[in-house]
Image (cartoon, rainbow, N blue to C red; front, top):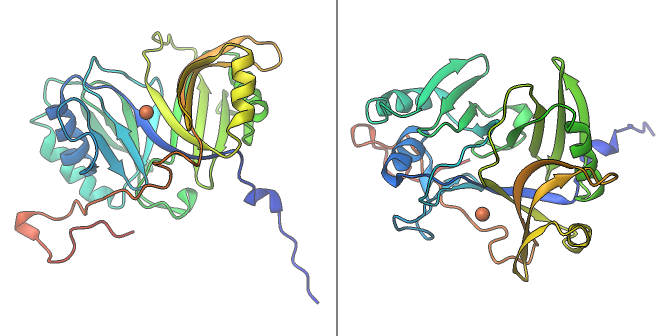
Length: 287
Ligand SMILES: [Fe+2]
């Protein structure tokens, strides 16, 4: 019998099973709606946070959470997979006038469309492709800019504390740590020599399988910032697990699989539907 050999490690999934949302506060929900829904073509969650004090935006199986407050800005960039990047560019063109005078900008780059939100968050929008697996609409990664000399320790934090596969490499002379999240997402920490602003409280939410072991480590070192409820806690400081040295700040909302929102079905629309080009029966996004 002809026995194939496979690299079985490529199929390993670590302890972080998914990143569900990225939270950045925004000062003006109407401008946020113009950017995220009219511009990016995403969908406002029709069931939760439907008032002016907060807005949840569905991106496939992920979300942006946008509470109304002073703006928060990620230091790096946020990856977004969008099914039709040609149509995306037409939508971005259409919202240019309404977003004039803000930090909004966009440009077609090699392999992605670079988009900056009205308050300075940077997105890289990609067409679906093999590097994103089956994802045709979603948030495949967030990339955080970190100080020189911290990325290797950050990889150790995710390996040892969060029990997630993490690799530390040099890419174009920049040190980068990549943390595997589920089967198709990634957290990236890229070192930069640029000045970084003080951490402003933006956060990500992740679901993890072994909920208690990271908690025990973090609690022992006084790093739990919120005991939210039975299914959720938060921490913010990423440390070198061997030396205890703080390396960067990024609030993690950590959830167990018993959290009521785990695997929640998100409503996504087909942004190609317009009055002038309406197709009956095609309102919903179909993967
Ligand atoms: Fe959150």
